[in-house]
Length: 574
Image (cartoon, rainbow, N blue to C red):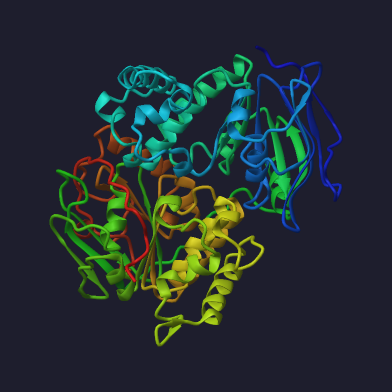
């Protein structure tokens, strides 16, 4: 199906008059339309008079800062929150979507941001992929299991995934976050949805997995599917979207079509002029080694790796899934023990057996999977923030509420968390604001070493820069910070020193003012093709002073490994 000619008209739903354009596809019937959609939680109006239309053969990008109302709008559209005002119409007929089952029956399929919410523990991977069949089938259990395997293979093949039966029969709760994301996407694409809503669908995917997804989405668009795509990755939006809708404070600020004016879109998102590119301003070079890893094996069959982490700088470790990033983070944070090698902290032997040992030593970890490892659902912000610090907020074993509240309010203010207050439930926050709470919780410890594993997933550009600034302040105090990410641009924005890790092997160790995006990507490609993994030196490293990048003795390398298991929580033992 071809896309009709696009025309524009003045924006609606902008109480401040800041809207710029509304995209309209002349003569094309609307699949789903919203008129005056509003949602309130108590006295807090989080979505205000939203009027939008979604048409076949169109990818609409929905953008907004954390807390702008994107997830609230999606929950109303998907039937997850039936308590909305205004109207939703499907094919011109007004409906009230009272449940996700009803929304899906009417052709609206949704992949929510919280991956863990889309997985049913205790059911196999195949059963999770075909969950809708299980909910409605009244068949013989053995035949149902066989059908689930067959149908799951077909659904996964849509995304180019060929998992063996040994994976399909496993408990889906054992999947890594990236594999769980792929499972949920495959389930959403089963059947024939009219409107597909994807909330941060690539946040846990590798570049190749994301590329496969993009190919599927383009084919679905050609076949007439309407797609709503939420992402903080502007490169994805530029590559995929026909149209960009911006929400700010629950109001539609703009609705534009190609060519996109990104500086204007950013202004609409944040309410102020913001540069799209934000290069690392001043590269700091630390001198004192805060932590040292010597001869540790991160992955099965990998060679020993050694690394020095210096205070006074932010170390960015760049690597794809399975590169060993999380294994290194968990080793330093007391979540795993390497088969060989030693650790040092501040020049002394360091061998944490559990996260509480690491916390007492001044080492904190913001883990990769926020929902499964960091957040306690149903608990308030005060409880989530103060839990690791019960001794500090207690007197004679009794919690002092004022101390808990003071700590929580300090974290909220330091990272500009959008919330009704410290008493609010963590569940009421957007994913990005939840992440700011988790980051702030651990940085409030004043650590010697802060480790952040994929800290920018689902985080908007402003929040990413706020977190980066906090890490810079931490490093300025003499502490060390490690940021682990699979995103080149995130690392370039936040890191003083950058290490590229491929299959447990350091293939590049360089300061940010000595490299660029092209050089980092080239290091990835060279190592993965086998041409750069055994060079025996660090590309771009400068060993002219103690503060420069790690020398060969600081970074020994090894062959490719596999993903690590998911740990249940990042909280130390009380």
